[in-house]
Image 1 (cartoon, helix red, strand yellow):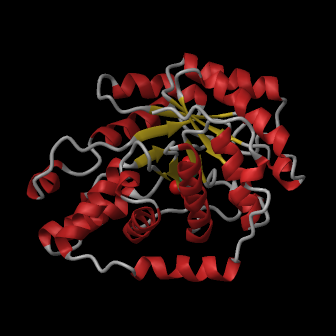
Image 2 (tube, protein in one colour; image 1 turned 120 degrees about the vertical axis):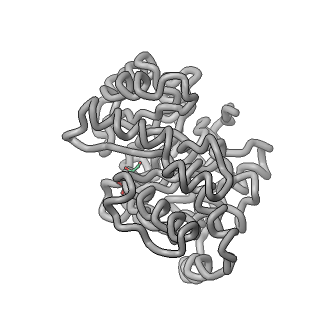
Length: 312
Ligand SMILES: O=C[C@H](O)COP(=O)(O)O
């Protein structure tokens, strides 16, 4: 699936008004909306694993650290636990790294079929000249990246310059070539839910394959309220174009409970198609550990000491 985008259609979002208290109430009610039976809960947690973009985006990343991350992506849950729940061949949805770590990631993932996602465009702030940001995308694709996580220029949103935002995203989409593009909106910087909705529409019109909440580096990262607003724009875009755009919450998702809450959001707002890695990713550097702990608890009836599970 690749989103072909549309011509700029500001008329699809200019009149958007958002009832923030209503969005916040609905978001707050989501975690409690489904009381999951035990087996069900394990199944939802395993589904979250296959949707994780297992991420390392740190200044001290090294090829060795990335190789360890990739080993975890290939075998995210201890084999004996997977055997106990009757699942085989589980991997994460992708690994997500900086551009210079794409080649080591590709090497480490070998023929596993797990995609490598690279951040690009001056991640996380994006404040570099456009030609350099586009060159960075091309570099990452050249290194073998299958997916590119770009960041938008927040100033375009804050100045309501939707044409500049569309043009920039269109150029990035083009630079991605056959790699799929995730557009990080950095919602914590965008000041209002209206801005989040408008930026989401522009990103989808410009051809983003997923819209993503955050870099993990903003003061406020993924929240359920922001995610709810973004999911509703995905629904509207689908109704207008027939194209299904994916969603990626990222930043601060650390617990199995988070993994369930966001999946409930997808199921309730967008339907089951959006519970598969093609249309749903969770960007996270330290979520897997808690999920594995909960699955271990499901299998053995007790919590394993942290040192018994591989670090995630
Ligand atoms: O895109 C992924 C984010 O950088 C992950 O953020 P996190 O480290 O808070 O999980």
